[in-house]
Amino acid sequence: MSFRRSFSRSLPTRSRARLRPRRRVAALAAAAGLLIAVGCTSGGAGGGGGGTTSASPTARPVGNLSAYYGQKLSWRECGVPGFDCATLRAPLDYARPDGGQVKLAVARAKATGPGERIGSLLVNPGGPGGSAVQYLQAYAGLAYPAPVRARYDLVAVDPRGVARSEPVTCLDGPRMDAYTQVDQTPDDARERGLLAAAYKEFAAGCARRSGPVLPHVSTVEAARDMDILRAVLGDEKLSYVGASYGTFLGATYAELFPARAGRLVLDGAMDPSLPAVELNRDQTAGFETAFRSFAEDCLRGPDCPLGSGSVTAASRRLKAFFTELDARPVPAGEGRELGESLATTGVIAAMYDKGAWPELREALTGAMGGDGSGLLALADAYYERQGDGSYSNLMFANAAVNCLDLPPSFAGPDAVGRALPSFVKASPTFGEGLAWAALSCTYWPEKATGAPHRIAAKGAGPIVVLGTTRDPATPYKWAVSLAGQLTSGRLLTYEGDGHTAYGRGSDCVDTAVNRYLLEGTVPPRGMRCR
Image (tube, rainbow, N blue to C red; front, side):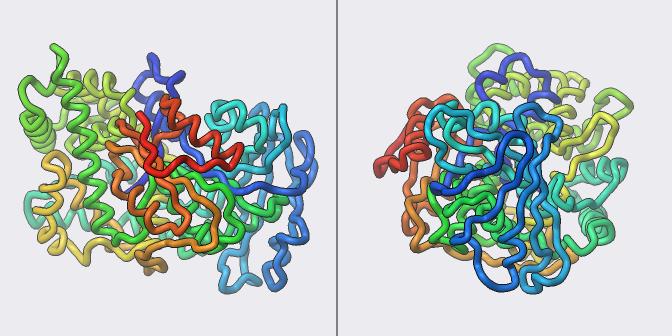
């Protein structure tokens, strides 16, 4: 498994009450509050549940991509009331656009009115690997602020390799079960070998099952697909809402097409200038920061499973419990067990949303008493394991995109060993496991096509970057860095817990973002919200 993923997993306030663990964390992917909006548009977007949409002439470039930019979308009902769907074509390889093609799933919720329609607002929940279509249909198209839904057509496209768009596949359910349980804190050479073998098997499965799409699921290619969609929708500029990894996708779009980037909101920002090992180490520190906030909250109550005393003592207690599970997993129901790796995943899953903390306390209490079902449910939901034992495409696409976008963190197990002290310093609770998780891309069958670099996007309009001060998955300093790299970046700070900021209950954040999306008003410099 790999935790090198930045996926928005926040719950809207109205959904937080009384969700069972599996339902709650499964909902996290569909309920992130984030927005990356860009630009006003001209031209219509078809009618009703059907019709067609085509590019405006001024948005259509000449050359061998013209057939893609000039295509028409045939909208149809797609089984979810209030939404219609279509299929977008894009070249498999932009270096050879006359070769094969990929088919990308698109969904739309038309502007509800009243008020003049601004254009299309593309949304992406992050990942990489999160289904934007599912996010739109389960959350954004229903729960985004009413004034935004009134004046924008909300649109989503599953990026290439993700969900309904030429999905990458790697392992079947039983093999994925085994993969998620491999010991990620190896104690000796034999266990290090088993971990490396698991990563190799995963990578080989992706190569064997995913065919020609595997070398062509990079963020750059996904951003180019977004520009085709922008044109086909009839928009002069892209309006986009991206969270977490979606901020990297949005920033990449602005870098490639600055003149076509309008109002961008990048929520829970990534830092494109960092190499993979630094991203992993920073994220490791982010999970430690989030855990310490959780522990402080837990220790205030009389029933905290982490005991009493200091946060440092609570961290040691949790780490000791993980060690116990490494030696003796506990029953978790349905013939399954909870070991160290799945327990760690369950705890980390709950760090994405402060609303999940009560469930985490309950799950830890149960696991420490010999019932691992609660933590296992959290881990299963994080991995999107279905009730029949199958898995969604999320983790497969996550690895495929990450491993193409950046060279691997480590050359091999020995390099991980040398880096362990810095990871443990960043997180005494999770550092060792997350360092070994960063080994996964080392054995990837495709060579990375991207490299760390600063993104300035010179020529783009104002871009709003949101950062949460105690964000576990995209540390606040990444937002500060990205806002500083972007020539037109403007940082909006949310002082709080959880992953991403928009739609998390802060009227200050929501009002500022809404004004930007609807009026183009940029938040004042240095603005901070609670």
